[in-house]
Length: 459
Ligand SMILES: [Zn+2]
Image (cartoon, rainbow, N blue to C red):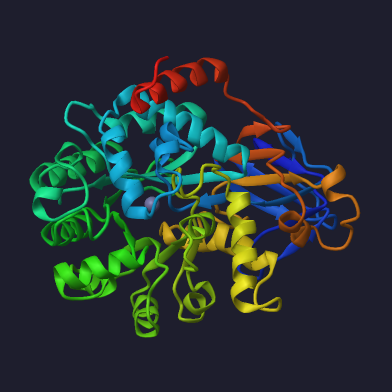
């Protein structure tokens, strides 16, 4: 008799594996042990004995969704009235002084809230782009990693940075930038302290200068060199707004993606957020480099102006495309389910009804996002050897009544919905629709205090 595995997810209506053959198994099951998937099967094969069985009756089971772009701390300034009708640059300049008040407590509670919210929406791995490190604010990166550990979330925070302040021709004020040497030393220290290169890693660090208009070209170059030396990934914002094109042409004499290339970032070590405004030659170059794109559908629509990332052209050019929810103001609702649905709608708005399906959207949220993080095969698929990260979506009730023929299309066309179970590294983080972690009320009180302090409001 074989030894029991530690978790069996059984009884699903359909298991969508997203494996190399894109197998979909009616009546499927997934066996997990020590944090990894050990076997996937259907009614024709007996599952192994298991210490624990998690029922997924009436559920669609998919790989866990992966968030490739976020600024979690911004949930401290959600729907912030002074900036709700601003352009990107005006919104940023309104909020930089608020974010200058970040501290470790604010970082911890915002990460706890943001990651819990994501887990409830079916996300199992999230990145975070934390680019504000005010003097005296403490170790914000370690504080958010502690929150991810407390929740059991797989986490890829980035050591973000800004070094080009207004006095040097950049956008942010002095209060939220650091000098290049300080940033590079902190980046190296963060990797040494937190980055785990092993398979199944729960924490990996990437380096992430914020954008062409908030860091010096020298910091971009030196960060790329440091990432290569430490063998970690690179992340930044790119081609997000027409104002950025104008800034780069005026400041650097070239377009944003040319600037990116000139700084040594054109590689498969990099993934970039948004990338809404490339020209055709730039799409081909991104594909040749293997640079990934974090597509942020809600952000595309909230920033507006008609800019939609050219997802179909990226995929045709071989660009890995993942999904990101982005921070508040772009998306005050952090749900990868919502972003997958947004990707479906935006792609069809752009390319017509035969151009993009729910399976394509789900592929962005799983395989595409895993590729952006350099973990395709380990994350984003349900296959032996992959991390045991999965979601069971219960397709019942009023929202799904009548959806009898295609549960994958139903998942993104019906709803809104959230996860019934979210399993990360073989451990349920959300079970029967409820977060397993306790203490939500206390965290929300602390979050409200931190948010009020940043917003300058009485408690
Ligand atoms: Zn962003």
